[in-house]
Length: 339
Image (cartoon, rainbow, N blue to C red):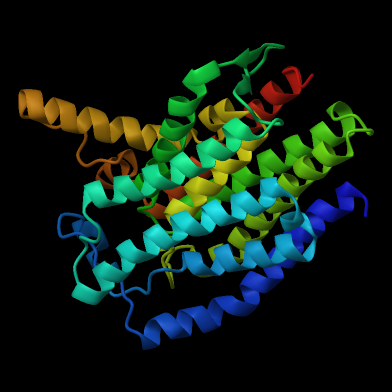
């Protein structure tokens, strides 16, 4: 099948699967009374307490089924990406389950979550290091430079996975915010794959073409599944993705970019995730050292809420900025060398 047909078809398949399973999952979460307990200090969201959570199950399952339907999981790139996504999703599920079970917003302890994230990061880093198509090299945006990081790739890759999963998790605080920003990111990566297959990867390198194609299908499937999930997650949300979804999305984005050797693309498609991280770090550091707050509340999207900007507008702003930055990131990949 032509790749220009296959990738959008995978997205549509994932959308359809997610649309079919979304309401049964929602009904199940309601039956199990798996409602989110909103943090006490986020008083603007107090009315959202009790909203079903763990909705990330919807797009994880749908994307995996779509990828399998198009034969992408036959290749190690996609198989590992699906496995890592599921592993991070399972870690998030444990966190969500504890919150639901004990009716509070404190799930896994911070060190437990970090250990889990680091453990998965170690495994995927070993896979990357030992894979001849990935190895220790990355491509630098807007240049023809391919940087062989050597041993430095190991801590770099681990920090990337831990950083992205936590950044996505921090940003997941408004209805539809992470789902829309992540869908935009996956569309950009799928576009990079189309460019690579048509302009860069030699026709004769059948195995590598298959690996790259599998990541394109994986990203398209994630984007399509998220589009269906947004139907229930957009404001006012009928279901939250929970840590089940946010950690899984972070792992999926990290896998796709690292496997294609373009991890720095995350600076563009993850621009608002970076903003969330920086706002939290600055808030904590200044408060610890000077006893005052820089933002009304961190992460930054909550600060905007307290400045009087409506939730739906903040989500729109974040999505637009992510989309524009994503296009710039796409251009940066097209300008880079893939030799």
